[in-house]
Image (cartoon, rainbow, N blue to C red; front, side, top):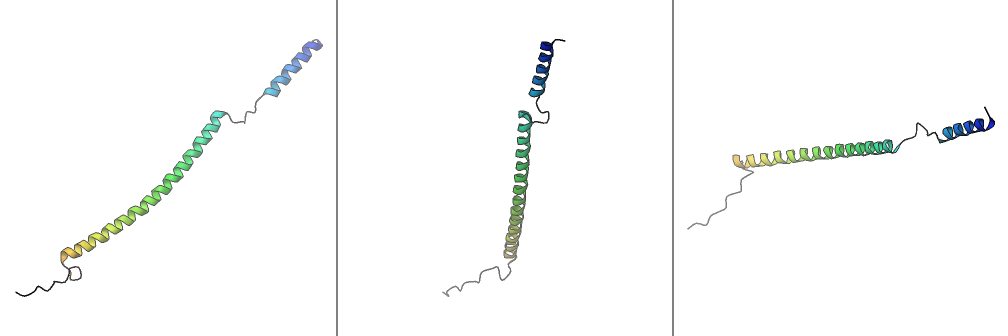
Length: 92
């Protein structure tokens, strides 16, 4: 092998090794996938928080509705504390 061919072979090998990309490096699709994963995680957390707040609101509404039905039931039964006092009608 001549010196020129040996030099060309070494130069080609150096180019191939120098241009070799890191196999562990992320490509654009992998980075986009990580962004999608992060967005999905944040969305899941936000939905969980919203569900907890909605659940608390529903429990309050159910409790308030139950109390309102209790009061209405007492008024319908005619309990003395729930009915207004009769007004004195003027005599004719």
